[in-house]
Length: 187
View 1 (cartoon, helix red, strand yellow):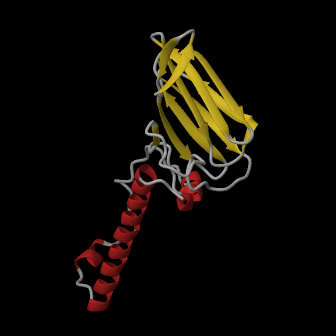
View 2 (view 1 turned 90 degrees about the horizontal axis):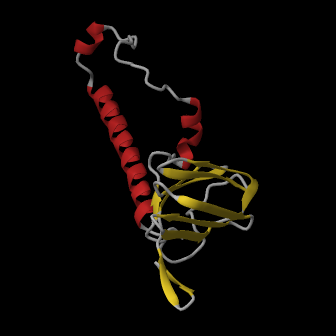
View 3 (view 1 turned 180 degrees about the horizontal axis):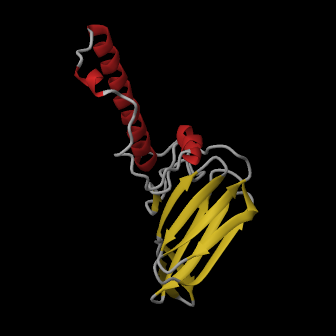
């Protein structure tokens, strides 16, 4: 909380929770402040994001310097009852190592938005593979039942085991990377 002076009285300013996610071309910022009033936002091309609002008469502010430049004209906002979502267009289509420019640990009110998060290497896969609520349980995947009962030779079993081990390792690496993004400041 940062104090602000107003006619010899100190007003404590609070920070709402801000969730973020990115794609190569944009940043998603979700300000979680239900029933916010007097919402104001200012985006600056050099990468500054300034938000202010009140809730129940209490002022809330966010003032962060984003990692890189943004395109203010192509950025959008969607205001709802529970939160305000900003889709901020990056000036250059590239992945940022972190959200804010500062070298120190990110502010505590900034959180990763896992609902919107996509890893850099998965961005193109996700865009072209949206199966929605499709039920795959009734699909015939082309395997004959008799093949399932035949014993596999040692080499096939080793290959299958190695493939499963690699898949588990890849999943573990992605999970650890997400945890590091949320817990450890990126340099």
